[in-house]
Each structure stands twice: as C-alpha cells, then as structure tokens.
Image (cartoon, rainbow over all chains, first blue to last red; front, top):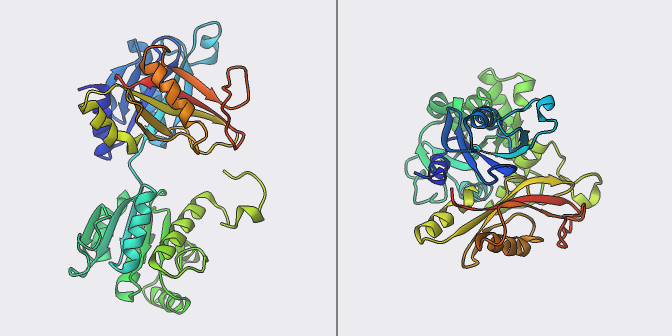
Length: 266
Length: 105
C-alpha cells in the first residue's frame, strides 16, 4: 500500500492520523504517515529524521494541531544544532476524527440540525427511545440513528465526548430531557443545548432540582433555551441559530454583527 | 483534505496525475486555516479550495506546471509582503503560503 492509501484508510476509519511533509530542504515532498502508535508509512529520507519527526508529529496529533517545524538534515531540533546547517521545514498536518454531535429527540428540528451539523463536519448521532420515530428513513443525513433512552447511551459512550463535541437535547419532554441533561453533565462535552420555551426551561430547572441537579456551575454549562436569538422560526432557521451558538461558545464571542463591532475578525 | 478523498480516489483509479496544494502557513488575516487544500488533475479538473476564491486560479496554473515537470514541488506564496510574492493578492490583505506537490506518495 502507498503512503496515501494508508493515510486515507485511517481518515475514512475516523482514526487519528497525521502527515509530516518536507516542504523545504533535502527530499522536499517526502511524506511520513504517523498515528498515535507511531510511523505507519512513508519516510523523510533517513532514520534519524524519521524518528524525531515521528515523535513530534505524534505530539501535535495528540493536540490536534497543524503547524510547520524546523529540523537539521538528521532531525536536529535544538537551536544551537541548527546554526549553519541546512534546515528542513516540515509541515505537520493533524487529522483528528470529526467532532461528535448527539441529538436527542427525533423531531423535525432534528433533521434540519443534523443537515447543518453535517455541513460543519460533525459526526451526527440521532437518539430517541421511540422506534417509530428514530428511523434511518427519517434521518438519512445522520451518520447513525439509535433507538435508545439517554441514560444507556451516556453509560455506554459518554466517555467519548470531549470539548469539541456537542449534545443537543430537542425532546422537550421531561421524561427524556432530565436524564439526557444528567448524562451530558457527567461528561466533558463542550456544548450542551436544551430546547424549549422559557416556561419549559423554568419547569425543567424545577425537575432537575428534584433529582438533585442544583449546582450553579453545572447548570451554567447548559445552553437553555438552545440557540442564538436570531428571531427565526423554521426548523432550518433554528438549526442555524443552534450551530451559531455552538461556534460562539467555542470562540467566546458575543455573536453580534461584525458591523457593530471592531477588532480582528478571526 | 478529508473532503477531497473521494474525488482523489476516483482520479487515482482512472490513472490521472494529481497535484495537491495545501495551505501550510498564514500571516495576517486569512480566509482559510493551515491545512485547507485543493487538488488539480492533469486535465485541469479542480476540487477543494485554499482561500475565498482569490488565488485558486493561480494555484491551478502552478499545479499544472508542477505536474508537467516544469516546476519542482515547492512553497508558493500569495500576498504582497516580499519579493517572492506573486502578483495575485488576497482581498483580506493576508499572506498565504501553500505547498504544492504531485500526489505520488
């Protein structure tokens, strides 16, 4: 198998992989394919540089970073060793698995949100305990449709959720909402959004208090009612307001119009 | 590059020569992040993008020259900062450095 075949197989399996490419210096264009377990394909020209770059690349992959690093021809990386020697510039590109979005509740808003989330590159799982609603036919755009209650889903897979991931709870039914919120709060997930009117939100807080969820810091992790205040109504407009809120939560921005703010855009 | 794999595989199966252009560094304001990529085959078919549409056609010209063996794999810079900078600029005023190479690995 070529280095490309090995690399693309990892990307398709959603397993983490990085490419280290010499972009300047001897062997420009040479490629090393690296996973957290080590080198799986290619070479940058000699064993020394392969070993050093593989070690650094595994570190960048762990952090999900894409960056250019400099070496000597045999992988020298301390600044003194790089004086008066040819330098090799290596572009390290990390391919982390796509972020996850779990959507609870198989409703019309779910289909629109799943579609928009796919545009942003999420791996989307739709969950609902009702077999007649949670079907592939209704959610062909989702990567996975699961007929399950929230608690077993979180027990089984909650550990997979991290800061880049999102849980969107669209059921507005306390039977589902409360266990889904409890499950999500027990994970490291970066975004938790819960749909419902302001009245539903108030009632939900009462129900959460009944099951012992009263910690302000925990409740502060909930985006409820879910979404930015765009004034939209349709499932599609709502989906945009939800993913807009997810982006703003990640960047720490207030999501105002750029025309009304100043400072750097990115 | 994730989004390009299906088309790249199709081109490889058809035996097409392919050049890959990846953004490796950005200075100042840039529309896309490092890692943004596009691919060009020997017939001039293009997938992906590396900017907001400002430099793509210049990248195609470079990529075809590299595929034809007229240029080596190399870093190409777009923007207005230095002597190597190409005439093509980015409307946002940033500078992007791309690495373009044949996909022969």
